[in-house]
Length: 177
Length: 281
Image (cartoon, rainbow over all chains, first blue to last red; front, side):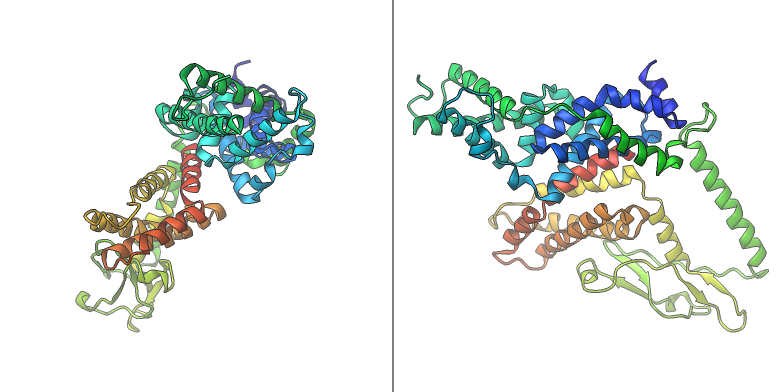
């Protein structure tokens, strides 16, 4: 069954069709939410909110774009809103104890490197951080990012490049120490 | 391993290596857990299907109806009811109209007087509220009725107010998008220091114009959404500050505006609202 059929059935109140749409997109929405928040509970809430919002606005979805594109746009907006309103951004740093669980090479330098990078990512302005996480960690294309953030594709490229440059500076500084 | 050239900038091939290291480190440290799909679905199902069933089941209309059919029918029905009521209650042979020219870059509201001048439209009293002054005073356009002179004993709607109120009700997603895009563009074009003064008047005039729209939106149905309402209130404040640039500009004015923008996360929130408006549009 195509997504268009599923959407029609969801609009008629068919929960199973809703579940099918959800199964097709929820894992990626959850992954993105987690990458952006580093908080499993918040990622879960954001995923739920995203689908509740999407289903409640499904009658306004014109099917000009793919459902996946549309729901990721809602997801990004939901996550950013949640991050701001809950003020959890400051608590998202990976502390050194927790970093021991990270599956990188088991030496202090790498643990510190990861922690510093995490911190540098969190210190990036929101617009750069979002583009970087979507592109470099979740593999979204610049076209998909542009659509989700309502920005030109070139702007997405610029933001990712600037975010990388900032992180490279951090890395170089750390290596030079 | 050499990471940098003499001036500290990474070499090109090293740049790629560094990017890869960053990507690898972050993807490992931010590795998502398995999503609890069933658990999340239970919540979604409850909220989307059980608590708000009417919102989901809105598509029980014939497939050939366009998205405008239902609103158009609703508007037509409302119009018919309005015309019918008008015919039934209007006194025969009496037409009372008032026309108040809308001033540029201001919001016109009728005064809190209960009486309409009986025959002379030049006596029409209106309170022209300037954009910045409105911050201190009450906001909003109140849809009111005015008592006719005792001779008729009837009341009629204030047409100016009614017209404005109707405009407010008509604010749709695309209007909101346009407003947000224009506001965002204006705020991003603000000079960063006080050296540039040539564009001040232009920017301040646009801000005053947008401030008026902000007031209208705050009073519209669109402004009843709590998140949007808070954003509009913040924009109202910032735009009022920008609008003041045309009359006075001290050294710290721009700095204060930029601080307000940063502290209140205004631009990212405008961006989110633009996305939201485009989703609902």
